[in-house]
Structure formats: structure tokens, C-alpha cells
Length: 200
Image (cartoon, rainbow, N blue to C red; front, side, top):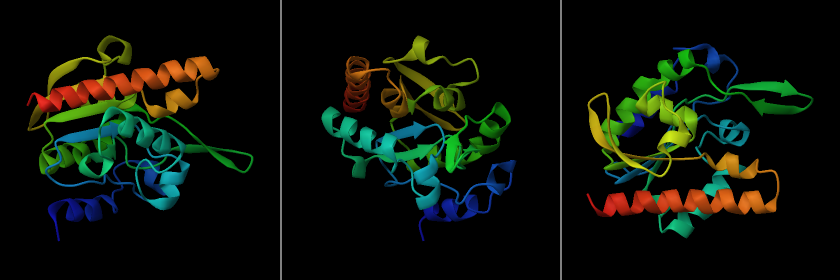
């Protein structure tokens, strides 16, 4: 059994915050140990919670397309979230995503730190504000850091971070033109991460 699998099994029993009480599953990261690139999202969504896998819902499908268009093979990258349980509120028959609070982000931070150490990526891509704050601290703002290649330290891991929007932000765009612009920006930021990885 690999160390990552052992870590995932340990995380499946996590009760460090109350999110586990309403979640179907702990959604741990997926990908190879030794991946040069790690992508960190915010939290699992409804589909991810039901399947127990990261980035398999609508935002994940859009991310798959963006990864392909930026020259990234998803099977060679490691994908995870800053928070491992789905936080939601009921709206009719639907479960709507709610952003985690700082306490919940901090409660999950040790899992993210352990993933970084065991995977050992040279470059991390933060997808959205919650991922960025989990990696770089509560003062993080996507608008200040987006598209930049920055040196960061997370626990005992040291490497490069490229920040961008979460793919769900593309899906929430108000119209086709805005969606196309947001998608092009996401692909451009991912290409920046590819270039950073090539330079390592």
C-alpha cells in the first residue's frame, strides 16, 4: 500500500471539523506520487461528494478541457482540494455548495500539507480564492496573484505556485462572451504553470 493511499484512508476517518457529519464521503486527492504538477481546488461539489473523487462534476469536466488545451495530461498531474468534505445547504431537491470558513480550511490544512510532501510537486496551481488562502495564507487575493509564478512554503514543502480562477467561475459567467474570456484566461494561467514546470 502506498503512503498516499494510507493517508487517504486516514483522512476518510477525519472528524476535525463538523463537515464530515453531512458529507457522503471524504474526497481525497488523486494522481501519481512524484507528479510535477499539483492542482488544488477549493472543496468537493455535489457530484464529487457522491462519487468520492475530485473534479468529476461540471467544473471538473471544464477543467479537463482546459488541461487538454494547455498541454497538461490530467493522468500525470495530482488533483486535490483544500477542504476534503462537501459543504452544502438544501434548496428544494438540490444540494447547493457553500464556501468553507477559515476554521474548516485550517482543520484540513494538515491533509494538504501531507499531500504536498508525499507527492512532491515542483509547481502547484491554486484554483480560486479558497485554495490560494489555504496555500499562501488568509491575506491571499486571486486578483493580486493571478497568472504569477511565486515561490511559497507550505509546511515543509517548498516550491512554485501559479494562481488562477476556479473552473466553476467560468461556468458562472454571465454570458457566452464572458465565459469564453474567462476560459481563455484559465487556459493561459495553466500554460504559465506548464512553463514554470519546464523551467524547474
